[in-house]
Each structure stands twice: as C-alpha cells, then as structure tokens.
Length: 504
Image 1 (spheres, rainbow, N blue to C red):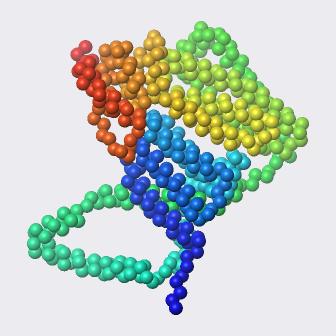
Image 2 (image 1 turned 45 degrees about the vertical axis):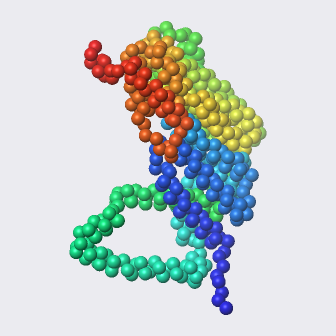
Image 3 (image 1 turned 180 degrees about the vertical axis):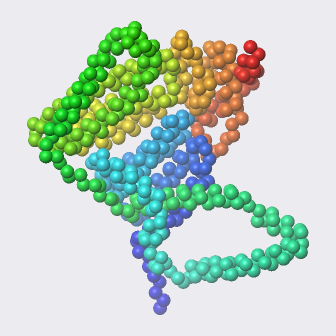
C-alpha cells in the first residue's frame, strides 16, 4: 500500500501564502502600474485585507483585539484614494495605510497595540517593512518543507511535461529555423506568433516579482512570523539633577523668546519694520516654518526626559513634570505666534498646499501636547502614544472633510488682492477637487487671469485619458465639468494667454 505524504500545517499555510503572493504579483502589476493611483489602490487594499482575513479564518488563527479595526482603517484609507484628488493628501494617506498594515501584523501576532510604547510602534513599523521585503525568501527557503510535497500523481505528470518541454526546446528551435529559411511565409507566421517587446516583458516581470514578494512577505509576517522583542531600555540615571537643569535652561530660552514675541505681537507692523527692517508679511514668512520645527522637536525632548528620569524619587519626578508643564505653557505661546504668522503669511502671499499642511501639523501638535499634559504629566505614560496616533488619524480625516485643494482656491479667491493677485498658474496645477471652485469663480476673474485658468483647465482635463484603474470621483467630476463647458470656455478666451501678452 502506497503511503501518501501529508502536509504539515505550516507547509500548507506557506503554500497558500505563496499562491496569494503569486496572485498579488499579477494583480499588482495589472493594477498599480497605472498612475495616478485611485480605484486600483482601493481594490488592491481590499484584496490584501481579504486574503489575510481568509487565511486567518481558514487556519483558525486567533488575532489580537485590534485586528478588526485596523483592517477597517486600512480599507477606509484605500478607499480615500477614490474620493479626493490632492497629491499631498494622497501621500499622507499612503503613509497611514502602510502604518495600519504594519501594525495589523503585530495584532495578528497576538500583540495589543493599545499598550505599545513609542519604541514598540517604531519596532513594529521597521520589522514589518523589512519582513515584507525579504519574507518571501524565508517562506520559500524555510517555512515550506518541499520534501512533504507528493511525488506521485498529477505532480509527477507535470514534472514529466516540463522535462519534455526542456528536452524538445533546442530541437524545435533548430527545425523552426530551417523551415523559416526555406519558406518566407512560414517565417512571417513565426515572426508574428512570437513577436514580443523585450522591454515590456522585463518591466512586467519586475513588477510581478516586486508586488508578489511584498504580498507574500507581508502575509508571511502576519501569519507565520513571531513578534520581535523590543530593545531593553533599563538604564536609569542615578541622578535626575542634569535633567532638571536642562529643562530649566530650556525654559529660560523659551521665556526669552516668548517675551520678544509678545512685544512684536502687541507692537504690530510698525515695531517690526522699525526693529527688523522687514514688512510684517516678510517677518511672518521668514519665521513660521522654523517655529513649526522647534515645536515639533520639543516632544521628543519631553518624552526622553520623562523616560530617563522615571527612576527618580517622587519629589524629583514632580519637579521634572512641573518644569515640563511650564515648558508646555511657553510652547503654547510659541505655537500661537506661529499660527499668527501663518495667518499674516496667507493674507499677504496666499494659501498653498505646503502652508495648509504645515498648519494642519501645528494643529496636530496642539492636540498631542495637550494629550501629553493629560497623560504623561499625570503618570499615565502608557496611554500617550496610542492616543496621539488616533489624533493623527483624526487630523487626516479632518483634511479629507476640509477638501484641501478646493479650500486653497476658495481662500485665495476671497483674499484681498492688495499685495498679490490671484495666482491662477498655481491654481490650475491643483487636483480635481479644485476644478468646481475655479469654474464657479471665472466670472469674477480678470481677463488675463481667466484665460490662464480656462486654458489650464482645458489642457489638463478636456482630453485627459481615462483608465478605470486610476478612476477617482474628483477627477471624474473635473473631467465631466470641463468637457460639458468646453465650447463655452474656448469661446470666452479663444487666444492663449501667452499670445495675449505678446499682443499687448
């Protein structure tokens, strides 16, 4: 009686992951090569999450308590590519999507991400990224025991067929060459039959292997990998005095800056011009991003001091937290100054994507520092990182509701043009979300500005090629609106803007 080898659970799971990796490679090559990303990202994300859920259910893997909401978050972030058409917002969506998939791996491994520290989040992101890139090699070389595969039956016949093809290939090539030399018609048939584009084949092969390796590596890390222990940070300084001194000096520097800022804020434009030789708008423009950077650097400083001083006595820890709280109060004035500078900056120079997202980052920092004061300074350090992560997702959702590109256009249109006119050339480079606002504003624009907008919209949206993989609701609406008004737009401005300027 012939004994049929049985597959171990690990080998069976590995083979199924390998099959999903192969399918993911083909699907990724077919979908994700089309740019800009839209429906293809939503479909690809749904397929990846669906494959993971199917394998978890099939192999009765018990995930952590956070796996479900992380999967829903990943699906929503994938669907975000179908709704908004803003390049910078899409980059943040992709960053959040990668993070959600990385943290989902830890949850499927049984970890509780709500209890993670900052080091754990960094560890999870780094290990998931590396494992997704190289995990396919471990899957093929170690996880699947190829000796368990049956050597009889269909596989035996398959090996025979493949061996026969290898043996026949050189003979077929020789006879085909002879027949082609003897008959031109037969040569034409062979040429048409085996015509291919070598560059295209290389590109498809690369992207199939790339997306296939990422899919298999991510699934392998989720379902077979084991959590990597984070580094042990047990060093506790014997004295917290250096940290008290450092915070005291930092508070002194911030206090000096705050005093200067209050003087300029209440002194107004005249004091700025008299002291710095700058207009108020230039003063605002030169300082905002430096203040954003300074505000962002305060957080790691406070977290590091809180971590290193955790071994102090209760009075020492209380002193550290009092100094940290004072620094947060001073920082609030600095951030208020930064936001006021941005308001002046936008009033004078208009709103752009960089300025909008920098302001959103400042809003996030305000929430994070408030959460820091509520948790870390009250001895609840373990709640801080997860709450900050949720605030980041909330700000991202708020940006989607705000509709950044449309908001930029509306803000610039409503801004008094005393110093600078409406920047039409910049406006037409924004995404499809900006198109309805631009079309609605055409009657109120000057002739030259209107022609810049008209020809910019027609050039970008009237003849735009449509690929279902890149379908996006905002881009589809922009194409529809421009095409429906194309004749009227051309009639309103028949001469291109450059030719108009030459005429004048």
